Amino acid sequence: MGWHGELLIGFDLETTGTDPREARIVTAAVIEVRGPEPAGRREWLADPGVEIPADAVAVHGISNERAAAEGRPADEVADAIASVLVSYWQAGVPVVAYNAAFDLTLLSAELLRHGLPSLRERLGGTDPGPVIDPYTIDRSVDRYRRGKRNLEAVCAEYGVPLESAHDASADALAAARLAHAIAVRHPKVAALGPAELHRRQIEWYAEWAADFQNFLRRKGDATAVVDGTWPVRDLADQRV
Image (cartoon, rainbow, N blue to C red; front, side, top):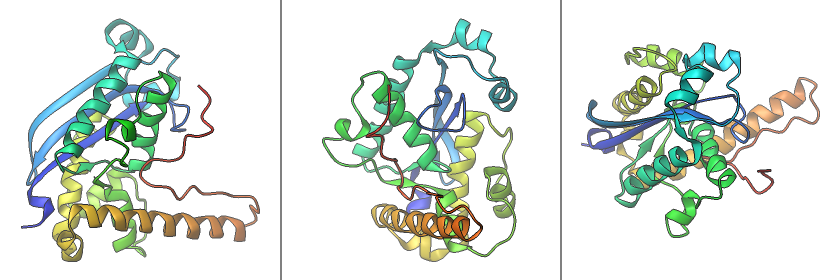
């Protein structure tokens, strides 16, 4: 049995926006999943410290009033999430996040914003991993499939139930189940060890970004830049 039959950690954030360097955490979930049934979960509700825009509220359903009344301070939530993820990585357990470059970059930006140790610092100077990103894997192994690649669409493609899209717990569970389903359909993915799969995803994401950037430039956007860094983008220029 490959990695997909072992313990996986589903991870998802719901946030105030779509720019991972600027958006803030509103809710988060970390779910233990084993082949592919849930075995345990942790959930957080944060007071992001900024107004949650109406379009974000419409997506995840968390109002400003609820976040302020029930949410924990943003720095406490970011610190707690990072501690939990690092504990799994230190044990060699893969963390599964759909479009990991968004969630892990946003978490890293929150840590930096609040003056907290980075994921790398918590791991003794090594990069976070192994990470499994069904978005990146599916886009590589089924490159020419038509249609959307959002979580809902890809879950439908692989027959994975998604009970409540844009709920952090539901999305985290779906991501882990989707990783399992992709491995079942694509034995070459299942045969890779988590560390090697992590390395391959770095390559696959960079290749996709370069191709997409070239596409945008051919379409007339001569200055288009698509960040090909995965799973955590550079925050060297992050303003806090």
